[in-house]
Amino acid sequence: MHEVGITQSIIEIAEQHARAQGASKINSVTVEIGALSGVIAESVEFCFEACASGTLLQGTRLIIIRIPGLGRCGECGAETAMEQHTFACDSCGGFALETLQGTELRVTELEVD
Image (cartoon, rainbow, N blue to C red; front, side):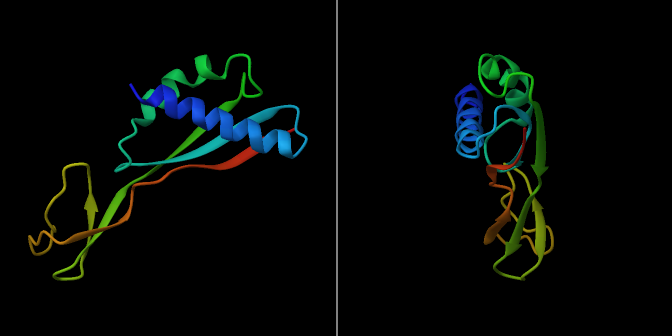
């Protein structure tokens, strides 16, 4: 499960930014996880508490914003919802989908004291 490593990286990033701002406690961390990122948000939630133990994030509230997949068809220009196994445009059946969103994996906000 690579989500453990990803969760540890989220914690490291949050700690680095909090310390750079002189914070002694992180109340919450907000993370965007896209549906096409290959990361299972529930797994990040599951291992967050254990990974945060003994860090500035111990007891921190994890807020995950799930970003749906969205693509644009290169053939008809229509925007279509995308999931991990979406290969064709919903409107015309074309296979030239450009990903517009859903690959996100980033820390977007920290609430600190």
